[in-house]
Image (cartoon, rainbow, N blue to C red; front, side):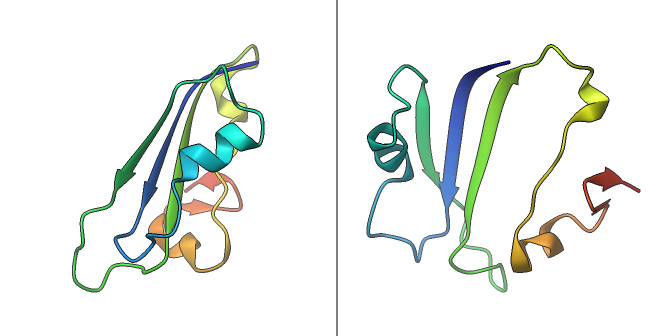
Length: 85
């Protein structure tokens, strides 16, 4: 499998660092990286970093796993334990 590109979005309250810079420092030097800000919708989840990895897979797509940590699970109520309902 190969990472094609990575998108990071952060909520407007996260301002101390660029996620893409941290990824570069961790060794992702040959992968296109992009940072963006989430739309500040009233009532939306604060302090949220989202990551979208575009990956070329050898395995069937049905084996994908979507991971939501802690309170972020409420962002996708249609996904339970990595499965779509």
